[in-house]
Length: 290
Image (cartoon, rainbow, N blue to C red):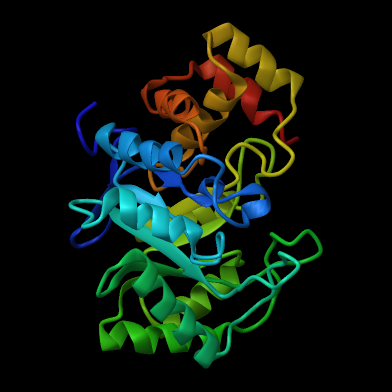
């Protein structure tokens, strides 16, 4: 596979064109996204294999580990020739492995500076502000993001950040962020079974803004569906691959970022970019959320 052909490409901004099939680095850390992986060499191999296959969009966060995934990314990929790393801020890790919010201007600057150090770059390609949480920990919570997003916009003006995005947000928060500074991406929870953002995805597409669904395979509880299993059997692929391919079929501005700590699983995930789902399969899959 030639570089930048996986599932087609999307231009997020001038100088920032990525393959629509990306890679999410969360699983490179240890259990519970805490501490080092059991096999660091395999983690490095996953990243290098992804890039060799055409992936040039790596999603990470310095609070994965913490610091672990960024340090592995730096070891594997620096100086990032043609590879764009998207990170996120707005949370830290506590001693119990929790993910408390950390969104004051001071905390955000500390996180940006830490990302710069651990990734080994002078400026971050894209920084997402993680806003929500909610009862499930992963859904938008209404409220203003003016102060934290404004702090990131200031760091963008300083040259520490090239582009901005938002994560775990609703449409009103997206509009509020855009009134402060341009955004190039939104990262929310969306998959074949969790479909609440379809109007937002369409609106962003009209604006030329990308949408990166996290947990494309369902999250901590993988998507379990007899329909998905049946469609997967009919097309001769695994349910996971079909779930990723379904996302790529939904809208041209969707960028997928499935993660894995295994080279074999990575190759399986990447095969979704070459899959064309027939109309009948798409219709059946569309019924899962209903």
